[in-house]
Image 1 (cartoon, rainbow, N blue to C red):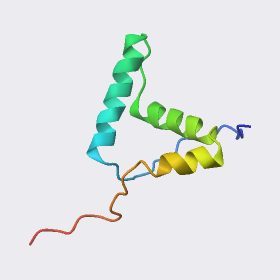
Image 2 (image 1 turned 120 degrees about the horizontal axis):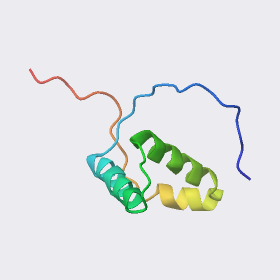
Image 3 (image 1 turned 60 degrees about the vertical axis):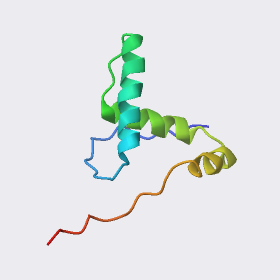
Length: 79
């Protein structure tokens, strides 16, 4: 069952993402364009949230093992 929430205003959030995953966003945009649908980066991320929220706990856990962990924090400044 998908949980629904009242409509909210957009919130800006900053996060890190590997370059390969950014390339996947472009691949997904191209797939959508082939079907005459224009998707923004934000819409693609939100679609991912929607799809992930529909997975079973076991499937979510299994899929989470396939992504690389990102280093948290900002890169050190070069001196």
